[in-house]
Image (cartoon, rainbow, N blue to C red; front, side, top):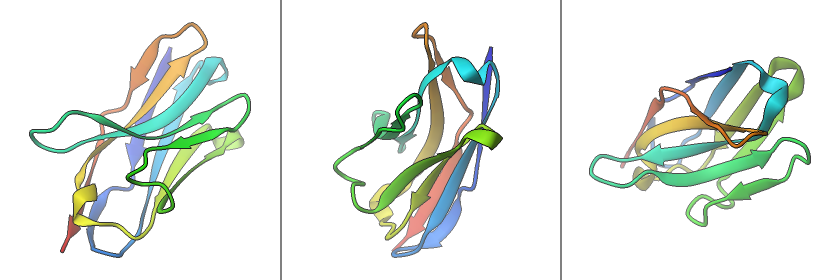
Length: 117
């Protein structure tokens, strides 16, 4: 029903920036919210940022607030995660997520972000 493909990961130095993209295809008009999660080796997957589609309201984890910005491009069915002032602690696989109006979750395959010190 919904397919998600994220891109934009890579290797950056501490203090640098990256912008992740997540392109949604399929029944995108049925999305309730989209967002980003991340998971480092040996750690639980954690919430990073989310956007409620109908209102555009955004939400952030305390650890990234003020440094990361989630946004959307309705015409392109794409959400972005602008990551500034990156820290080594931000190193993780970042996955895009979408929740349909019916409550069904969808996941992308993830993109690696590595921040060197």
